[in-house]
Image (cartoon, rainbow, N blue to C red; front, side, top):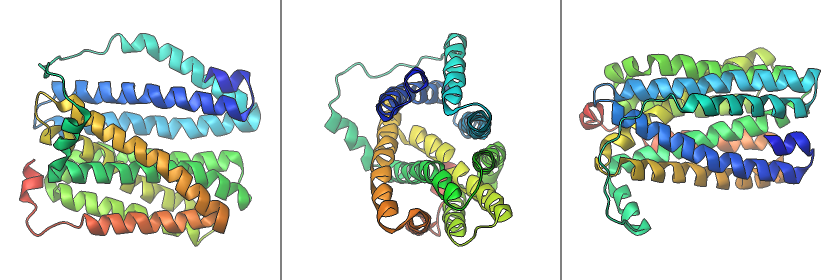
Amino acid sequence: MLFPYLFESIWSLYVSQILVGTSNVFIALSLQNVLGNDATKETRDYYFSMFALAVAGGALVGPVMGGYLADHFSYSAGFLVSMIISILLIGFAFFIPVTIKEQTTEKVSFGASLQLVKDPLIQKALFSSALVLYSKDIFVAYFPLYGTDIGLSTTTIGWILSIQGLAMMIIRFVLPKLLQGLGREVVLFTSILLAGASFLGFSISHNIILFFIFSCLMGFGLGCGQPISMTTTYNASPKSRTGEVLGIRLMTNRLSQFIAPVLFGAVGGWIGVVSVFYVSGAFLIGGAIIMKPRKNHDEEVST
């Protein structure tokens, strides 16, 4: 966050995003493995849901804070505040309790790691996680452009983005109960379908009230995918290689985050920003159809 604060240029954003992206991989992987090791099979859904709830809390506060700082001060002020918060959290990290479980000590090749992905449950978890994460990032990146095109203020755009973060917090708070009552496959299918329909809703309306509603519904939908994929990935992993498989999950997520902006940037530049919402909605609905629940999904429920 220091670079774009000191240097208001495009190269400073490139540098900052390389550093932030690299750091985020270590932070997310470490915290997910710590939570997975500390949890039992019965409490893991709850632990990962609460972890995702905290992440959604950041998604709620960040856009509102960023929009307010940009409108009333400057974009640089947003980077400065983010930098200060990051520095404060370094000290907090030392107080996180860690439960260490025995991990494999043998050297494992990258190819051997990828062999773990043959498990159908892990494949579904990786696919749903990548689909949800790229969709969230695409919305955060392109809705401000779309909103600016139709005359929305930066503050209004920030509030619409934050409503999605609030919806993610709410759904993740009740997610363990939903999984107990409906099962993983039904919840995952319904949530991704809802997110896809909400994406399409943004493309056919310019009404601010509807934007808030669609953002909320999209948050409900996208909020389910990440904690479900984390739990499924951890549970299906060999117990001595959980960090390794969670790392593959993050690699898949980052690959989707790398490809999606390039793809949708080309689509948006060629056809228009609104086309991004059409295509993203179609992708999500198609992904939901691919993961449509089987008649017998008791295995996933018990897992």
